[in-house]
Amino acid sequence: MNLCYFIGWSCYRLLFATYFRWRVYNNERVPLKGGVILAANHASFLDPPLVGSALPRDINYLARKSLFRIPLLGWILRSVNAVPVDRDGGGAAGLKAIIDRLHAGGAIILFPEGTRTRDGSLQAARSGIGLTVIKSDAPVVPVRVFGTFEAWGRDVRFPRPHQVVVKYGRPMYFEQLRAEAKSCAKPRLKEIYQQVADEIMAAIAKLEPAEDKTTFP
Image (tube, rainbow, N blue to C red; front, side, top):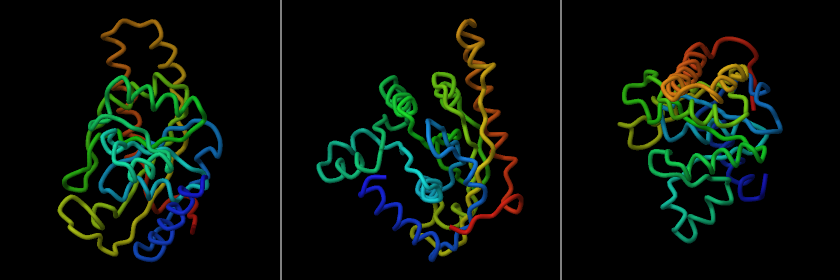
């Protein structure tokens, strides 16, 4: 971690440990080195720093590319490994930037649902994450967050001191679908993208906070 990232990482850990009384499950399942996709459900603006703060390695976050043009903010975003993308996270340039980070050995957080939930429940996965997974060779670690919707959901103006939990699943690899995608027809390729997205979302849905090893960061 560079100094700017470390400062932000430390501050968020303190915030989550005190104000939100966090719990972390199975963060050892995330590889300490090499490219990896962290695929999490999305309920709050708290989700990205929560997922990243529980890991002993730095990760890459997505940020709208227009924000990078703001002098001081742009410098901060670059310092904390933010990846410039279009507003919806799509586009060829954004995909290339994500793949480049993964090929360089970086970890990146993506949200299969594409947007924050409106009622706290899990949403259907969009095919975009499937495209990213197939174009990369990185494993996917499903991640589920709990309590962030209650703490700072869409209709909550100021974060509440509600306990938050993050749980990491076992890595997923998709070797067979990646091999098939290299030579299949376009209609099947689209099906593969959605199949990958659906399998990731199903893995996220299976994660429950009261199981397996608990870590107290």
